[in-house]
Image 1 (cartoon, rainbow, N blue to C red):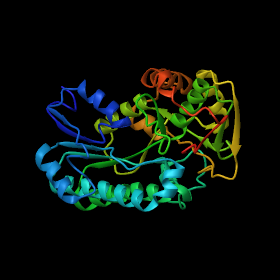
Image 2: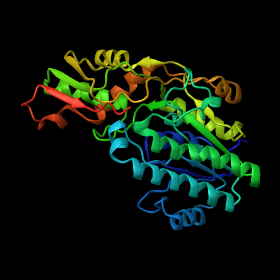
Image 3: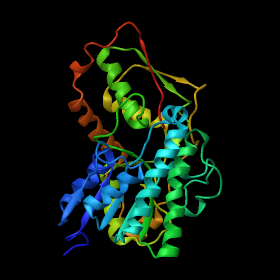
Image 4: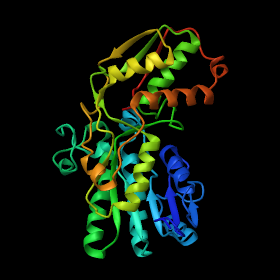
Length: 332
């Protein structure tokens, strides 16, 4: 017998990057049913679709991973829609879950919710000690409202919900779309594309001096499953590996693993995003009994191998050859 025996579980965003890995792990458990709602069937921004989802799925547990996301460029172009869509999806999913008396609601936050100048490593207690980094503040604040809602609902309704704060995630099945990808897929794609098409240089946003912490997606999925089983507080809980790396140093590893030997230019007129990001994971280790098992370099190697197979070389045969520079928003 396990926590998941005979449970109906809804995983919003279960067809996406992180969600698909969470579903993989759930399939190994003895769940009665795993429901992955698709936006074409249930647009969770609209309350009527949220009600319909709960009516159709009758879940015991909801793992809410669905989100409207993007990098720095996408956040700067779409602050209103990112705020509204994320706020409405999360608030409505939790509210209807409360009305339906589900057993547990797992809400996924974002490291972008932390204040811009939080002392490193970020502790959960520092979440409210300032305003988030401006370029992604609307998205970060919309997700942070789930922490407020979770705590308020536990106090008033004794509703069992938790709020998780993951580091930047990466791994196979990540989003490699040039307009909306985050830093690791953006760098991998640019280095491989430049190598395959014979480009001599790539141009990247920012200075490369900003730092980030990266958590491999299967480690993140495992932590979410364990938090669902073992964590029962509305106080935020960091999910990470506790290791900080500068973007410039990350790029050097990716260049080596992708075999891109060209030059890199940095456009320092474009934003770096938050100056530093690294999480204190002591509470994760204490409450979940879990530490990540995939190192950054091993995870990058697995991600690059997956991408090389997923997007074979002939994909770029029609690429424009006239320019020697490929530019990208690092999308941090």
